[in-house]
Amino acid sequence: MRFDYDIIVIGAGHAGCEAACAAARLGSRTLLITMDMNKIAQMSCNPAVGGIAKGQIVREIDALGGQMGMVTDRAAIQFRMLNRSKGPAMWSPRAQADRTRFIAEWRAVIENTDNLFMWQDSVTGLEITDGTVTGVTTSLGVKFRARAVVLTAGTFLNGLMHIGRVMIPGGRISEPASHGLTEQLRQLGFETARMKTGTPVRIDARSIHFEDTEIQEGDNDFHKFSFMPGVKRSLRQRPCWILYTNPEVHEVLRAGLPDSPLYNGQIRSIGPRYCPSIETKIVTFAEKTQHQLFLEPEGENTQEFYLNGFSSSLPLDIQFKALQKIPALRDVQIYRPGYAIEYDFFDPTQLVHTLETKLIANLFFAGQVNGTTGYEEAAGQGLIAGINAHQKINGLEPFVLGRDEAYIGVLIDDLVTKGVDEPYRMFTSRAEYRILLRQDDADMRLTERAYRLGLATRERYDLMVAKRDQRDAIIDFAKEFSIKASIINPALESLGTAPLKQGVKLYDLILRPQLDISKLSEIVPHLKQFLETVEDERRNEIVEAAEILIKYQGYIDRERVIADKIRRLESVRLKGKVVYNDIKSLSTEARQKLTRIDPETIAQASRIPGISPSDINILLLLLGR
Image (cartoon, rainbow, N blue to C red; front, side, top):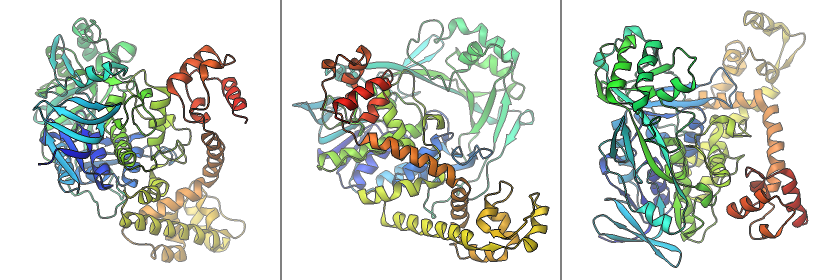
């Protein structure tokens, strides 16, 4: 066995798996080190991928040649497109996954990726030579050499779990914590702090009264995560179920607050504001008499259910009594209680946009160690870190996504520019160009870049080009084909839209909110015939892409103009050109923050909290702009 590698990835969670696959597929000899090879890409919390803004990230990962989208499609037991009542900028795919199948699919990917190897062990330290990482040491006493290291340790760095007053060291239930790395990195000058996350109780479905819940079926259409047509959902599809807490539940929970680690001083770390525990909900929203919960199956055939919305670190007896007050759970049997977990993270402003650390060369951080929460945010970071580790050691150009190119670009720019004061979760509201960053066109935005990089395959690139050509052909047909009023008016009136006073182009009819290409194809024979020329397997996807561009082109063009104006500031280089502490006309806060973050460009400097427009004007004057 060899002990030297190009790249070592520490941790086989969602960030680690994407990082290792990307580096290996680009040609780097890569070692993925994990404490348990049977739990790679473990879905530690809910058995689902995607959701609001998170689903867009998964589509971007897939468009770039990453694996999460394909793995999720093959493991999915329910798929839903969220926010369909809103505009396409808000549409967000989400899938329930079979937890065991998800791991198996990821394991198959890793074991069949050239240049990628695995080692089961715990990393206890980094080898550093002259300010550059050169390898790692493990608990088994093995020393592996590497030209770059990607740290993706998730919640395992000094992880500590809480169930009431019971505290158990570990990174996940029944899994040990990782010790040594935080202490070493702190000695090297890294700023570190603690964060908290949590997970709900797991319930035996045989004890649930489903007749007292509301069923929530999945979608049964063409939507999925991967842009690759051969990847399909093959597992039995299962519904989720909606239920609610009530005043009796809240009364039990309030009685347990004195023993809650969140309120008795036991936990002092930063928790997620947007995914709070049930005890936080009843305190923060004391006026509410109920909170919505979701029963989500953990797999295709298992009886294990996840109670989404009921994260808790309260004592076991309090959790159990509160659950029994919910009618559907009056006879509840549980597999394990909910728990909170505290873990170490590193201030992400200590990174550059490639996710390389500023203090140690060739050392990259990705995932929850950067203060984020969520599988999707972790996987997106892992993909970028793996790509850039390969690029760095081979003297190639860094791979960075702009805020107008991808949600992943927004995520990373937010982290390295603004830092975090709570676990970072992606939302559509964080993206100022969300009309440009729709889930339907992630391949159009990113696949060509990934193909030029060498990560996306020629097959994926050719599929994207063929889709683009067929999409544009539909738009051109709509612009050129004329509709006569006398022929179409009876059908238009039956569809509840105003009749025409004169002939128009088909394009103008598609613009009407009451109409779409599918409806029009039923009443315009020439359109139906034309659509039959579009490849059958992806026809619905291509037609939807064309329709979105037709209906929203004005909004898209307007946002593109704004993005291009801001992008010009991205070209004004700032790093290394100014000694901020010498510029007395800058505010004290600006001097301190600019010195600490050392932004690459004027545009990045403008996004640092506390940097005012007048500060930016001063910098532009100094640069002669």
